Length: 118
Image (cartoon, rainbow, N blue to C red; front, side):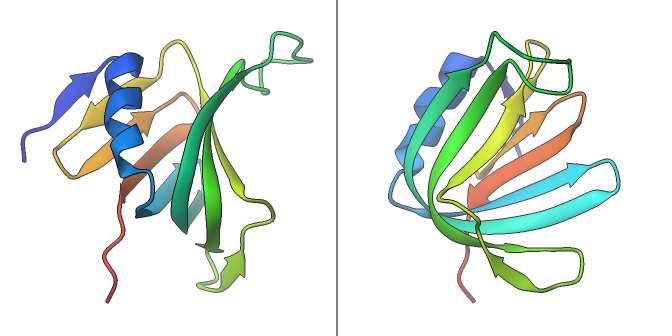
């Protein structure tokens, strides 16, 4: 597959084309892996300049929609809210390989792809 690096603006333009689609979000953060299936209804961003510490992200990608999460124990749980947040940093790397996005941060890697229903 042809993987390319994106600017945050290019990422935003491409991911918005998936509004209305069912997406799969995979998170690998330290020893925590989970997957979320979501009907993507909207995409937004937030900025928090009043952070208490560096663990709280300054920027957050917010994927809005209904869905469920599959945890390490293989159980499906409904999302606690209709918002899935991905912390973003100035150093976040955005990649796209024609079928999935990878967001690589200091905390972990998030993969976003169209869900294939089996």
